[in-house]
Length: 180
Image 1 (cartoon, rainbow, N blue to C red):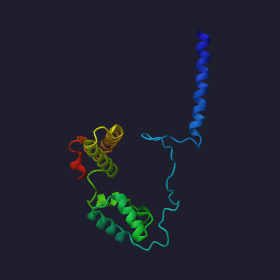
Image 2: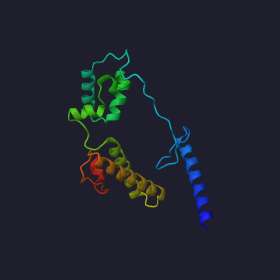
Image 3: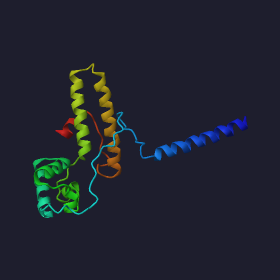
Image 4: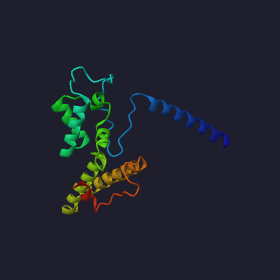
């Protein structure tokens, strides 16, 4: 029996080696946590870190625009989209040397909740509101569980990097006040 055990161990080691090769191949993509997608679509930033020659805006002007848009109530990603579409600034970081959120933090305008967390909570509140009207909607109940588990996981991360206070807790009853 010991001979049989050792050969199966050797076979297992070979299988693991083969799997390792597969994992390192450029075509192997990790799947999503909640969803079947294995998408690899993303925008590629230019290699040059300097702003393009056609961007004529100064760093101070860009910072002023960012602060103005933040005071209007726009989220950092929306600020980036507005700057790109209306002011022709392709990448705030290349022009200013700082990211949008860092500029907002420096000026004391950063949102209290991180943006991704805010929108997940908003989604969970909307699903809960829907479930109050439609009790039998099992799919929505399942989706709510997925969204809330994503919120808990993200909260764990943000507590670790000190973006949220250690005592912060997601409570579904008080969640609507967070995103109101």
